[in-house]
Image (cartoon, rainbow, N blue to C red; front, side, top):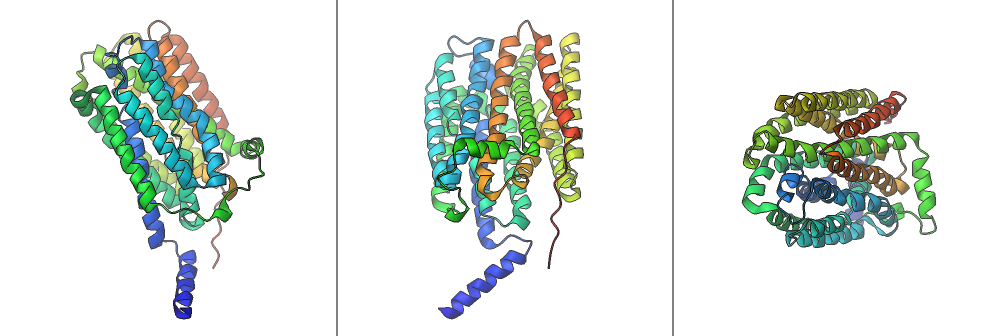
Length: 414
């Protein structure tokens, strides 16, 4: 026994020094990546087709479809912070299991909804499964600091793959299964995620969790006082609002210009390839060169360029401008997507990782709700107001990035 103990201590000591993943870290990363993949694939699968499929629901109008589209983001956003804080107290795994259960119930309700009002209720219920911040906090708990960036990158890669597959297959699933059938499939995938959590994901050491006597308000203030986190959170709001509003509008515009729903992959597939290239190059440059600020400035320029092309498309009523706007937006969005979580974990303490990720995800999902709802409300007669609001939010983000400081590189010691 003593010999085995000494060998175990030796291996633990070596793993603390090595910059490569240990076998335990690999298993944890694969498990959490799989959970996040199923979860995000389910969410992204609806983005390209929800607005056109929801037109068949009883009582559907552009505004109500926008509310249903964004309703998920409202409850998801408001519960990210409480769930993140709760995970700091009771443990990540319990929160993830509870959240997945709520998400499954919401999808089952959506699968039997035949009116827009029931769909809105189902989407609100879906959003109560707010586990994104907890998953990213858990991967930070289960990996060492020197490999944590790559661990986050692995989770980011699973999100990217989920995004690509979802957008590539959504038009086919939409035609084959319909909106209700897609929600049923999402419920099945969510069950797979729940099984993965229960069978493969360990609980982190309780010593890392937050003491019970720390109040919710104090934790939120601790996180909000960090300027970098405020900037990242606003960026999450801008990207979320842009994503939901863009994919509320573009499918409707494609249909108006004669595109069949089953043919939308011809637009989305090249878009995914371009977005994937932008994501990989941006992530490498930001992490390796420690040029997060410069990469974010480039990303916001792409978002502003997308807005310009969207305006040209509306002015000239030409599809090519809308497609160009979609591509520029998607490149910009993909630049931000992998580096925001990494910056959050770099900017907070081990005790408040869950809360910090909750604040960021709160901003991002509230952006989803606001973007879709505003786009639905202004879709018919008030395009100009919609563009002005998006432009102001993006320009303010650009201004905040100008004073953003790149995180300090950790000095390696022997």
